[in-house]
Image 1 (spheres, each protein chain N blue to C red):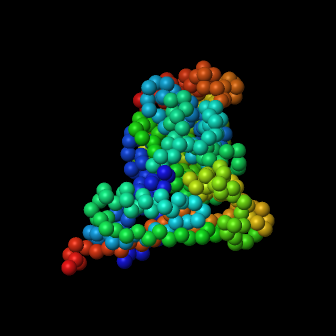
Image 2 (tube, each protein chain N blue to C red):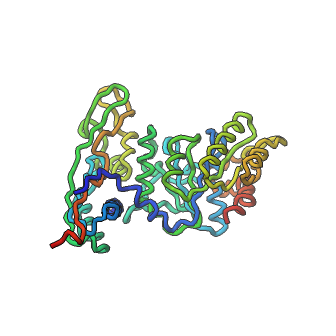
Image 3 (spheres, each protein chain N blue to C red):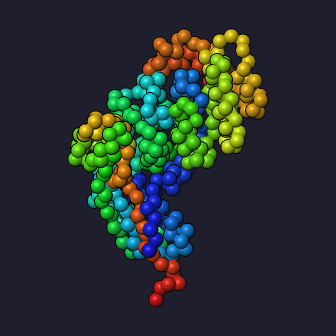
Length: 246
Length: 142
């Protein structure tokens, strides 16, 4: 007899992601710097280019990818697990599909467990890239993803604010220490000619993916993918980040 | 049929644990099923006993025990401990369905019956746990 008291979910994660060629975590060390906008628009851009793309909103307490893409919150189909919703050519999963309009307050352990559950039961199938929209900071979910998904690569979003630059530097320092592969560093909401973000990329020897200019049309485009396709965000991601992921 | 995915994870975890222990045949698998997740027990047992084991010889003739565990919550705000009957999750509606898929969704719907806080720990009875396996090496046979 062998007593185990074992959580069986982690062991099937590699099977569930067996058909996924790349897993890219879009992360940033501060809130409000455009991670969700970058993650969703990047997914849209890659899907428009013919890639098979998945988008997984891991910001469990404040999911917003469905808002950016204008997706209704409805339960996913269930068949030997759960199937992501297919929206605008993207296979998408979010806790918002389950929580509806309710707030979801989660401590770290509960967020870890929710992540494990969704990784264990979601059927992603064959994908060229699965984009993870990470919650801000370097807390539980970012660390869980590093531990649970050894194939993950991170795309770090920052901007030129001194407050953000300082936190981006810390994030780059940690990722280097943990030897996490980096797609690169992307500058968002760029105003002026400052080169602090590009300098950080050079200092940490990660690709600088370019700068998305501050685009006032973005707020109006939220929830409307046709309008989103006409933003500078889409154009920049299509030209620069797409080259690194295609 | 989300139970099939959960059963699949139990089987794979059992096979991995058996391999680590040098066990050539698994005679019994004991699985604990938490009340909160509202697993369809018949469907789960069907998945365990009929669908998955045929894919691996180590699971031939394996017996399965599915043991139910009552859910317990502990409020982080006032310390009250309580059970499933003390919270208003609509078991047959969307709330119950959400908690079935992801038990942590209970934090969106359940509240402490004393102080109303959504800040609680699920101390037992959340979901599925591989409790133990029993088996033998081929060398142990008659």
